[in-house]
Image 1 (cartoon, rainbow, N blue to C red):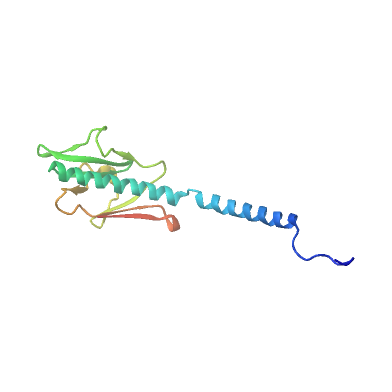
Image 2: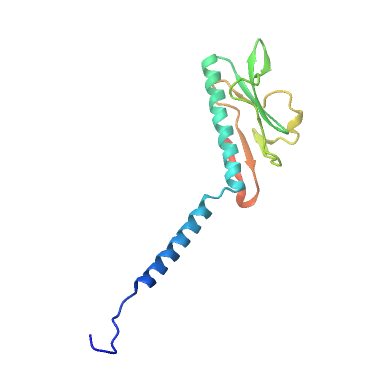
Length: 153
């Protein structure tokens, strides 16, 4: 190579700087995607409710006795129909009663009727026999972009 002419191309230092910057950007994006916000927490609560309802309806079919779900101000619990009356499932029963996370107040519609005073319900609002379709309802958690909804069935 004649004196005064420089070779064209990238130096090793320049390539390493680009690789480091790309790594930092990739890590930042991956960390941002992995964060859990209110929307994900709401979806987890609704997924847990849906799974519990599946168990409840399966139990109703297997036992040949209706099962029920009651929403109340603090969460929801499960019931069974036995000996001509509704009975609350014991604490060790499955599915287990659930308390809503602190500060979470869902909106619940059962058969298109908004439950305004869920704490006053003394009996289950949702019934599953395992043979007939269960009582339809909708639960909404969150607001705006964080709104998550469960429609059952």
